[in-house]
Length: 278
Image 1 (cartoon, rainbow, N blue to C red):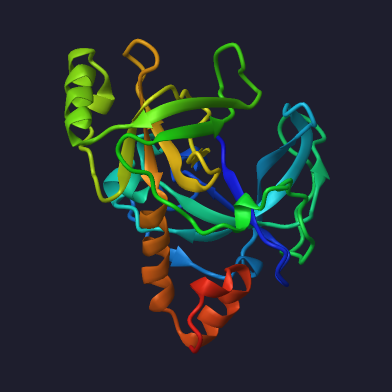
Image 2: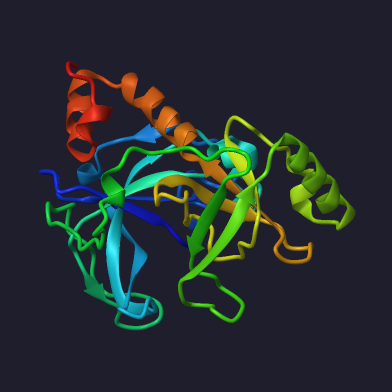
């Protein structure tokens, strides 16, 4: 799995990790074959799970892990929670969790022998000299070139950071791509395209990069990678969930919460995202 972290130097002193639900596998959101209701809660009230492996200066995975604390996931229909989450649609395939300064060294290949403490207000180390993380979110448009980043499970850079540049397709390009995918026998050709939710990119993305960030030419996050073609010649095609859809989905749930819960969650969000009064 991959993910993208967003952080500010605000009082909460935590980072927010955005990724794809299918990277969690069955059972994390709901029992296989059962629907999941949307969840938005203070991450300090959640148990931590070891899902995040830290990297070295050379961007290679280390034996140091950080716990993540679930904060938000959308509703997921029962038909999409089984089959190792392989059938989940982009509309439901993202989640938000929090990360603090806790660090643990893996003892062996199966466990680390300890449990994380509750979320603590320790600032994680985030390298962002140009201030990209504090810029407003953006959306991509047809014809834009985007950078897709993640950690592949296969290929010459397996286990290390990989990046790919691709072009966002317009409606005509999407239809041509879908026809090409169907001809090649690629399952992506039979998965409906949802313009409100996603963009399709002519570019390379392989297993392991799911959940990774997609960035525009100014370095702003525009989406999260969720799927890629497997039966076409490179560069192939990739799908990412648009950041505006993610934000609007979270905001719709946020606005329905009682005032005290909104205030609690507001500690982890930029001031512009929080209503001035409950």
